[in-house]
Image (cartoon, rainbow, N blue to C red):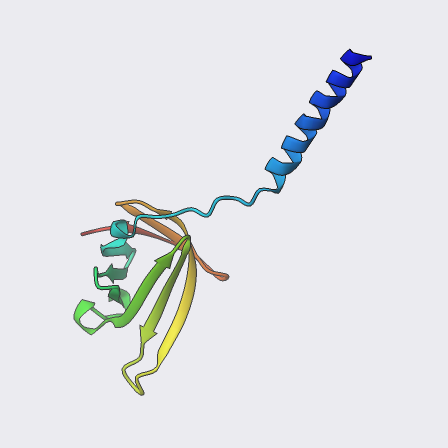
Length: 123
């Protein structure tokens, strides 16, 4: 009888651990913000992230270069990255939120509801 109770106790504890572990939220990934500083490229599209949380994006396929690119402010919190694009006309700002999939000193991958993005650091 004691052996049966011991087995029931072990089974109950195992079941409890499985349930608790299965219900635990997935850890939110964290990324080193310093890894994003610099210029990133995907084909002809470029993004530059500055240490002051500002940046600029340009696409040479559209005959737009860094000096005339679209300015933005950026932030990273957990796996969420936000770009707030600064419009020259009317001084309006357009926010855009992305989910970071990978951020290393050489690779930046993120996505939104519509598209996946993958950049390589060029400098």
